[in-house]
Image (tube, rainbow, N blue to C red; front, side, top):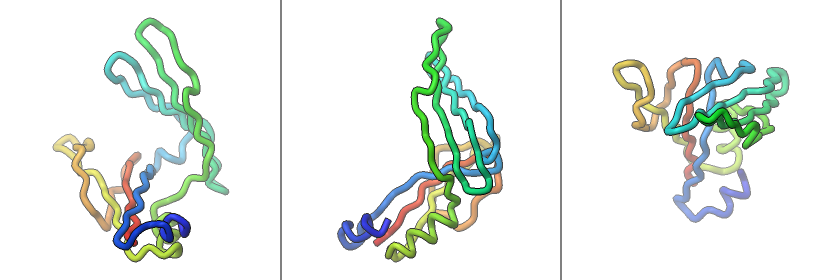
Length: 132
């Protein structure tokens, strides 16, 4: 993060995405029916002691065929406060967190704005911006 900050021009931005919520710490599969196929987010392994996680993305098709483990992510799960702290330590002057709004059913509405407080929901995605 320090290298990124140093390489940015003045007023440069570093954008990151993050996910979280209580379901982020559960080994589970989440299926989403998309246009002509099913997307499966597989939280295969979660280690709450060190933050290590292994996630896979699978695809399933109407003809019964599947692509198992099309993508695999083996990484350390970072919380938003940790990411914010590391960005500040790296030299970013300000941090902004973009949080998605919700519709009348409580579902994400695709409208993102800067927030200082998020909802303690089961699952969320946020965008963090480090501002040089």
